[in-house]
Length: 129
Image: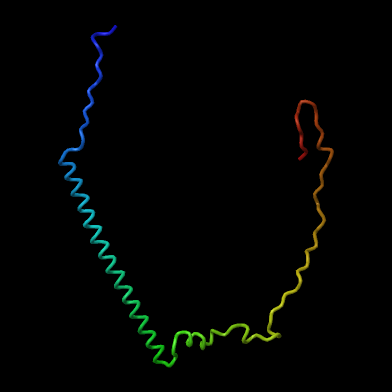
């Protein structure tokens, strides 16, 4: 039994208040300024490290040039550890390998008994163990 005529509910959308929107704007602005400051600090640090590395490299190059080495390639090529095996290996020093022989296989010790494979009716497949 119904009493009266049914009515659809009234739906009213209520978005965030103006205070909530202003608070969100302030949080985003704080995040933006903090991110910019952190990025600027990081970039300055990286630039400082790059400048320091370049100065160190230039100082090393000046030391190499002062020792009469010329260029880096000359120093590397004249170094005692830059000798290749083609320059200092004789035929007597060469390591050789021999043909790999196959291993002798031992005879198999596995024995399968045919007597354990009997099947009886109604038991399905029986495997001997």
